[in-house]
Each structure stands twice: as structure tokens, then as C-alpha cells.
Image (cartoon, rainbow, N blue to C red; front, side, top):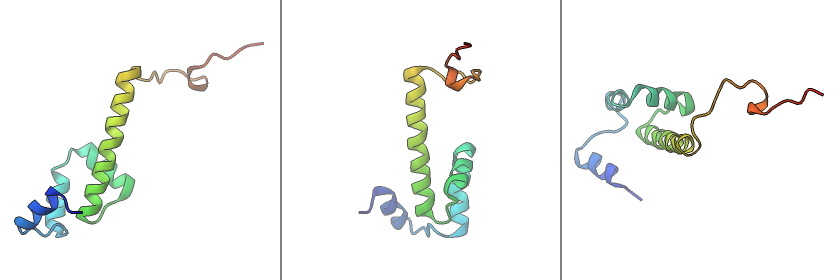
Length: 88
């Protein structure tokens, strides 16, 4: 099923897999998102980029939701996820 983005790109007569267009698309992303996408999937086509970006966004939103619900994780704990260790 085609979505709105595909229709817009077709109407604009843009070759989504042209190297220059892919570079422009990637440069328009926040740097951390582009870097994470490359590390995760190393996308080569527009459809791969789009799928990877959408997956990264879902991960980001899930992480943000988790942190806002439970507070940020304290990374200073060194004993088994912050659990107390019995000495006896």
C-alpha cells in the first residue's frame, strides 16, 4: 500500500534512489538519528532509510516513555542493576 510520502515524491518527479537525493535526505536528519540509522541498518535506498528512521523513532519514543514513567536510570550503580549484595 502506498502512503502519502510516496505519492508526494512521485508527483514531484523525484528519483528517491538518486545518490544526490539520498544524501540530501540524510543530511536533513538530526545527526544522532542519521548516525544511529547507519549503525543499525546501513541503509542504501530511500525505502531502507525510511524504514530505519521509523524504527529508530519508535525506539526513541519507547525509551523516552520509559524514562518519563520511571525516571532516568541511575548508571552509578555497579552491583547487579543496583541491587544490594549481601555480605554474609
